[in-house]
Image 1: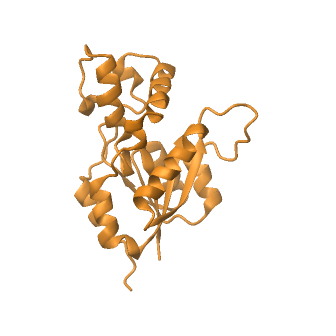
Image 2: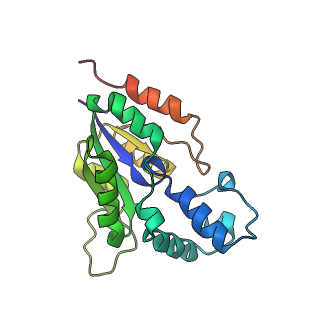
Length: 195
């Protein structure tokens, strides 16, 4: 049975869309761009702000009730209900360690029938916190059980490919995925080992 490693933010949920819509746009009503025009992740250049300002805003948003209660990606959830039992599943996220309990709880609340392992690559850690992995690629190399990675980051996809994993770039405005969500999920279904 193959193991799918799922990115959490912007794949299993729509964190960037939620932040952009309910935080950035409300705090910056004169913002002249739309979500579909976010050409990078992080999108600080498109927004005309410093990277640190964006990260601080996103981290603050992660603590809000809206973020803690985001709905799961309906397309992925429907796919898991139909095909999820044909694979094993791991969630892997890169985010500040202080928000790890919240994301683990969110994943288990919405995906616990399929995802039973939540990995975190801490970002922006204090110097007293041990750093085992600096990237998702390093984490996957240590984990040694992922076969397929679904992520919205080209960098993470490239790292997974270097480990010999099959990869699917989840379509978002900031990447060059040629797949639609339905076609990506069909590709996943086609990868299942026949029982």
